[in-house]
Length: 340
Image (tube, rainbow, N blue to C red; front, side, top):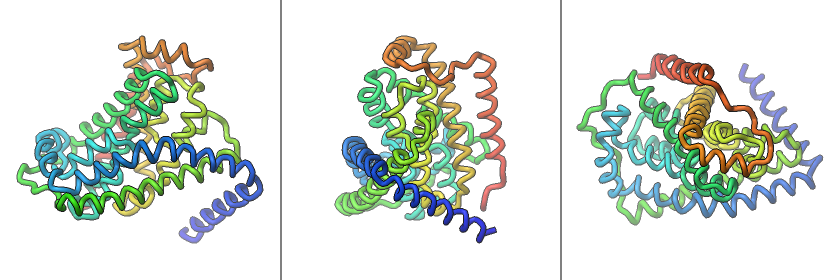
């Protein structure tokens, strides 16, 4: 079985290499486009925040934050208080901030693999800078639409964290939290780790952009493969709830970036993928409901978009079924036996 799996991986990589060589001019154009996105969106938008969030999480200042968040972290989500900073920064910082901070806690033995898996179920988010600024203000030219998308995906993450906590016992208030470094040392370590993470993200975006330009897959698949370029180039093909779905799913390019973390914490990619789908469905449903509560944002977006949106205007029955499906997935997966 292992030989067969490795053979398939080799065949896939060989096919990708052949495509990039055979269509090298197109691949070059795609790579340049990916590099431009990295220079204009990823590096200036993510790197400073990632350094800052990493530094706070690793420093003594982070202990103050974790103590302030402890009532919510421990009593509401039933997670160790050491995870508080990783959760809040993951929600607002954008992928892969939450995953990187989760990995840092795991590497420092501040959390075990079971807790790391719980965090990776919901702590993969687009973040405020990407969703509100990049997608809303810059791409959609509608900040209100960006706020609505951010609220939908963030609330979906919090709901997953809350409802999936029912199968876990309450965490003791006496938990000591995570280990802390002096501020100067935390800055050095955080800068090095953050640069490595951003370079990894940029490299993946360039690779997937090159492949996308060479293969020319349909616009509907583009954000599923690579979320940043896919949304930037094809946003007028999607409704707001559809965009919420895609942003929450995050794209296989992001998944690819997180493979090493997923493997390190002994999490199966299938489980990670299922929770991405749950998050995406719930985000789309919440976004649909928000468009009914705040029709102005949806109307402005509708006037801006010229293409017919991909259907995501669900009726009440389908909405109820989507909620039920998400709940069933959450409780079914959570009911499995956890590792000791």
